Length: 391
Ligand SMILES: *Cc1c(COP(=O)(O)O)cnc(C)c1O
Image (cartoon, rainbow, N blue to C red; front, side, top):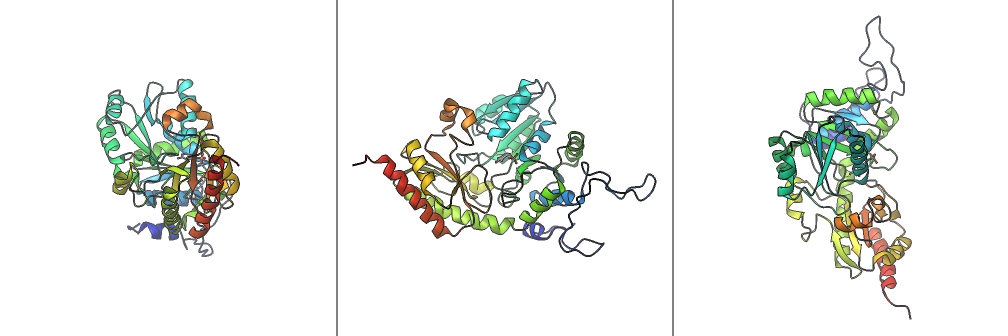
């Protein structure tokens, strides 16, 4: 296939390829098994765990968007992370960010505790810490940028270069930006991991994942593992996710434009003590984000000056931002990391990571920006009331 613009790939990869009836939309094949055309002759598909036409088309689409050799589509984002971990053996070491996604943190810890590999968590913006751990010859370095929920940005190019010199492979979790805004393989990564649950599907109606591989050899290995363990995604989920990807670019462009408006509104408000959004010039990762991203995305977090009391008032006052976990859908969500996504971390670890009790995370959706700002205005007015002594 020739080089096509990613926006064309997203909108039209696999369109009108059906030779049976000329279906414009790629068909959904729910069949778990496929008939052989003769003895010892199959048509390319045998059994649905191993391969399915619609899931393969989704894998090909995600791989093209990320600029990889191919991809494996999994039943969740966690299954995608776990699939990459299958590269590590008992005596191997994995390096992970100290502020990685909570589910990834739990998975790494659980497998380490079973003796399946070693794990070291570091602040990957700390070059000395990275070099110290790379001297121990890890097999894999996991990267997440921007991080959740503080939107910290780390330098994928620099980490990949150092890791490669030390003989380690690099996997980047690109869930927060999607390939529309960041392509880690071009920056030196060996793997890109996605929770397709988020921006790629974008409609909050599928849980799914994918691993994109830069190299054919890695792809063959991960495909084999996915078939062995059975973590491949369902055909219907693949169908919905590809349908979501059709509008990835316009969705994320519109959502990040809304997020920029929201971020600058919040930054000026008296009830807000700090806003974490890489698009703001005040953000510590702003320059780096500019150098490795094509946009700043639609995720942000901010700290309410009034703490937990203000948080309660805020989430009870807003009407458009729904109090829920997850992100990347067309609808705006608000989450309170301390009691929701990061509750399992414990108060002390949260404090060390900089996640305050007044911190709120927003996934900014496709609603009209005037309505979003009005909703936040309502929430913040209620939050400010909480901070003032009642007469
Ligand atoms: C949601 C998420 C995951 C896990 O994905 P699931 O689809 O929920 O299993 C992994 N990494 C990041 C950054 C996520 O946001």
